[in-house]
Length: 116
Image (cartoon, rainbow, N blue to C red; front, side, top):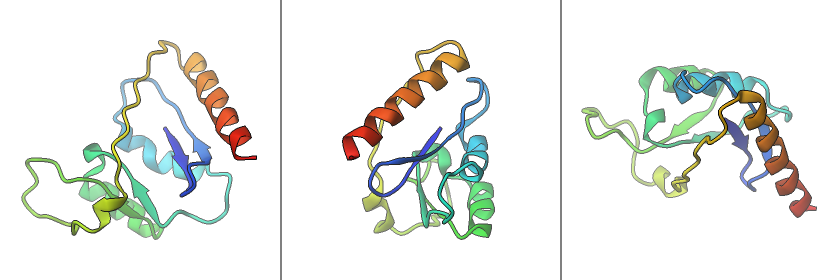
């Protein structure tokens, strides 16, 4: 999982094996950020639509922006926040975590060098 700022620059990377759900990595990734200020918003796909994650991140002052799951009964977000959501498809093709981390570091280097 990679966290980027509003300009698309990576500020935190955290990887695990492919078995844990991505929502479980959200707080550990935010703890490892290289900037001092916590982001105001965390934008994710509908897997991030979780009341437990909302409560955890609200403790840090972070609002979760994610489309609701199809089976959600109580809507917690208004539609205006979802304008910031853009769907991105990322597939982990690497079998080993070390190879995947190396590819993430390479991608982050390329993004940061293009910003210069």
